[in-house]
Amino acid sequence: MQKSITTLSIGELAKQSDTGAVTIRYYEKRGLIQGVLRSDGGHRLYDGTMLTRLHFIRNAKLVGFTLDEIDELLALQNHPNRSSAVVKQIVIDKIQQLDEKITALQQIKRALSKLSACCDGKSSIHACPILKTLKQEKITNRKKK
Amino acid sequence: MQKSITTLSIGELAKQSDTGAVTIRYYEKRGLIQGVLRSDGGHRLYDGTMLTRLHFIRNAKLVGFTLDEIDELLALQNHPNRSSAVVKQIVIDKIQQLDEKITALQQIKRALSKLSACCDGKSSIHACPILKTLKQEKITNRKKK
DNA sequence: ACTAAACTTAATGTTAAGTTTAAGTATCAA
DNA sequence: TTGATACTTAAACTTAACATTAAGTTTAGT
View 1 (spheres, rainbow over the protein chains, first blue to last red):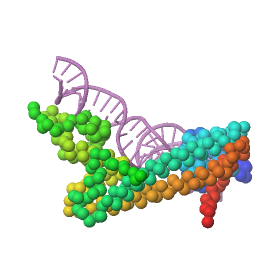
View 2 (cartoon, rainbow over the protein chains, first blue to last red):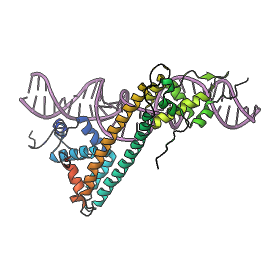
View 3 (cartoon, chains in turn brown, yellow, cyan, red):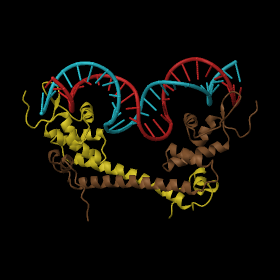
View 4 (spheres, rainbow over the protein chains, first blue to last red):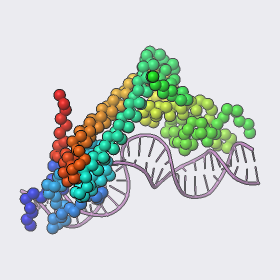
């Protein structure tokens, strides 16, 4: 039973791609990975292109894509005729989403900073201005003009 | 069967606090709310202080606290002797956490912007520099000096 | 031969904060 | 009296991306 020199078992692929073997099977079930070769005994066999694909998935995750979105990106690669503008638009949309998230967090941070600033930390809990503010019906979100 | 003038049913409290009735019971089960009065028939009866408490919870959630943390904050109010410095520290820690999250998101955004910038959107998918980059073993995270 | 690794399916657990559903009973307000 | 609301417990569902466990079988590598 010979095997091609460059073939990897799922365990080896897992190591080289820094992914769990379970996760690789999970990706396969999700459709992120297709057409996996099998040994005579039924073990999954991978080649270098799969390593590339796993790197792609990992990198895309790192830059904030969900697995569903990664699936899309991978699918696009099966349509070589299409323009890369599609890909670029996906990235631009993602940046937009990130911006919204960041802005939201910054607003929360500003609110907390204001709370923190109004408390000298020396009063008793009973008189704590932070707690007092939180008890208000509406938190005023005044902005400086 | 008389009731005090200022008593609220769970439904009324829900409306006034902009919280679901189910959620209010959930808070009770979680311990965020205690010592709820009952009518003769067993219905929960609330007064204005509960409205204040629900506002507190809502506001604390708005500024990014989890229910567990809110529980802590509420518990602190039962110890009037303690200094408000404890509260202030909690807020400061939260700000720190937010900062970390924001920084992480900004890094991701920067990576995506770089990706976007390297693609003119005119090549074919096959040659798309974004996809090419994502395929790399390691995404280089060079920083300008 | 022997051990490590892989195979299978399916379910359960993780985190957070609820929401939804069920299903039947009881109470409240007009 | 009637219809709206509330009561109960308990479980399942939601999002996201896996990790864990089970339990038994088979294969791969030395």
